[in-house]
Image (cartoon, rainbow, N blue to C red; front, side, top):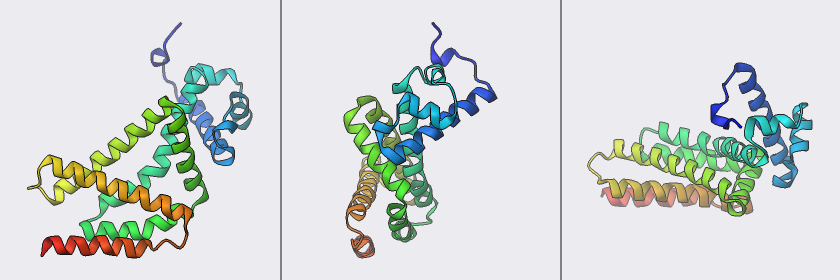
Length: 198
């Protein structure tokens, strides 16, 4: 039996694979992981259930692809905007603007919750999310290193970890409490930055 990696890629095959992942992500948003069944995804994609085995090696492979796509949808927009900020102050303004919007979007919120649930229940999904978070922290550390080239690598890693944890924590708390004073929290971080510079 050929390994999945040994299968030749074709435009049609890639398009079908994307269609299956899109259908599965839609089901994940609607009903969580229990809704993502072989039959449910095939029906949503209007295709043969056997294609899930062909393209992903079965439901676990499809789940990993879904986790990757969902992680991209949840993590990448915020990280991309933060990396584009010219300095820390601009990054805080970006976070202040994006955090309430991200948690106000029902699809993003649902995907974030399902990613965490899936990652805690399935080690393979946990690996996918862990790798995405590590990549995001690495990108943040690289950007902080551009702003502070004299900082040692351990400090860059530590600051990137704190930034990621701050964003994750604020998102989680804002999901649960729409009255969370996000602006005030980020203003306090800005005050700490100013104190460090003084």
